[in-house]
Amino acid sequence: MPSRRLFLQHSGILLAGALLTGKSANVRAERLAKHFAADDFITLYAQLIDQRTVINSDKLNLILPKIAEDGAVVPVSIASELEGIEKLYLFADKNPTPLLAEFELTPLIAPQLTARIKLAESCTVILLAEYKGALLRTSRWVNVMRGGCGTG
Amino acid sequence: MANSIKIRSQRRDGYTEVKLLITHPMENGRNRDANGDLIPAHFIEQLQVKLNDQLILTTNMAGSIAKNPFFTFRLKAGNSGDRLSAEWTDNKQNKDHAEHALD
Image (cartoon, rainbow over all chains, first blue to last red):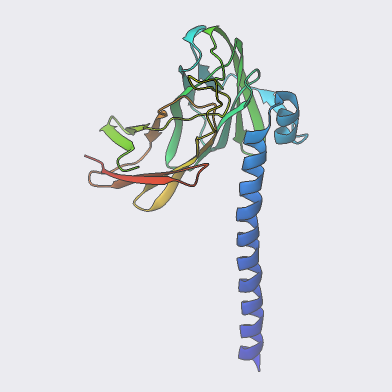
């Protein structure tokens, strides 16, 4: 009864697949909630890197004002000529919520993005890129004139 | 929460520049109101952008993104009439959605 066996095999695979996707969605939501709730940059950063090698790269461009008058609205630009960046993480090491944003790119998006972030105080803004199994990093120091209470 | 999203696009040489402006307080839960009471956290957690129903960009964020989030990004492709849609979900499970046709 090959067809029956095949059917059973396939339904098993389908069931496993369904379980996996359901589970991964939950795991993902939990992971995100944990990362964005983290308030200590060093712990969070170590967790995200997970003992992978980080390479400082001049192929990533992080454009920020050297002096930000108002920490509540700081424009940031990310630019890179690299093809195949899968994910970008943006951090501010002194913010109460150090993980600013996580961008999941697809091949239809060029790594040329801008956003507006909050910076609680003068700090280093760090950009990490997941690129072909490696982690690339670049960072910029920003002087924040008025951080304001509760920004970040 | 109707019309909290504005989408603009501009076709350039070989790519399309997309601008997204969302009206949202992005409260991180650490600010106080005039009476000194904490304003509860209220921020967008996820923004998903689709091109003709295909997911092209996911942005996860929290209270460290400025009030009324503004994003720009670059689409490598993009033909006239392509449908670009954006949807956000916040920590109170509010959602909004907008569509835009590339010119």
